[in-house]
Image (spheres, helix red, strand yellow):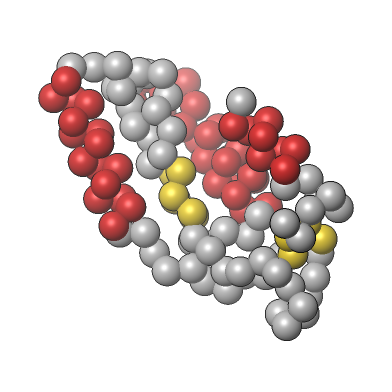
Length: 114
């Protein structure tokens, strides 16, 4: 559902246009941290099946790279359907990842008009 929203809202030519002039562009430098809980799947299973690499390619290299987010990071919250202790650990990991979010680096690729 989120990917569908992102695809519709950020469609090139609708809200975003390619601009090379920093003084005209409305798109500010921004970093990105993506924290999806992959439906309780274990990290070793995701690695074995190639799902982790597929998510990185789709979201980090594709979607968020397309928007110009830099730096970008994917933090998979595997085991989100586990024990209460496990879920608390994931919440703490998410919190730490947010605190460690890197400062945006200028990487202009477009401008958004909303």
